[in-house]
Image 1 (tube, rainbow, N blue to C red):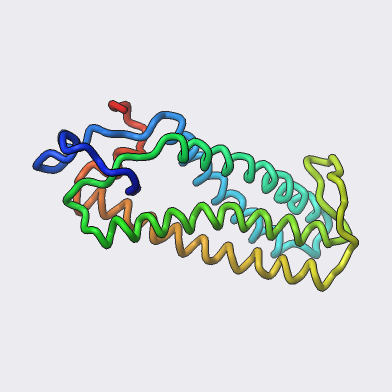
Image 2 (cartoon, one colour):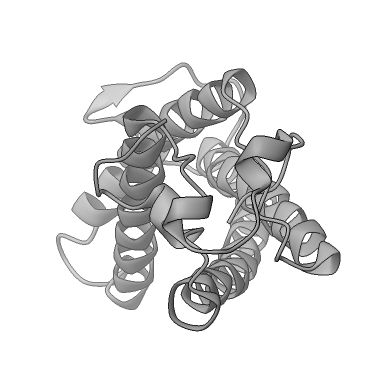
Length: 198
């Protein structure tokens, strides 16, 4: 699922499967990966639901929760990115085609960019709205005056980027399932919860 630093010859031994691919992500990387996966799914679900009930009494609760968890999401994404930069993964096995390895890097880069751009665009939209931005009921500093048109522009970008994220996640998932069910090269297991060597 990842391709970055070149792998020493000893780790690219002939053959395939877990025996030829002992490298695994650290427990921290695995935990952050799956935490963000579940978190993003939850944020998208709440976002779509709150838009369907935005005119109903009590819907403001969903909007405030969405904003609050969106702010925290940025912190989690930055933590994941910082960990990734300090712990570069081993390259994909030699059996993976070069174009697939490059595509993997492109999709991962897109995912990281979207995980930052989506909450940022939502924050900018909320900052230009009348309600502003709160973190679990605590008002955050307001730096922009309410501007309905500007807020709608940012919210439009926010919604569009979510759909781009969905497409990127589907592509990422299809690649992971290919490694698991078709190639069976142990790449999927590098990010799974099974204990292994690092």
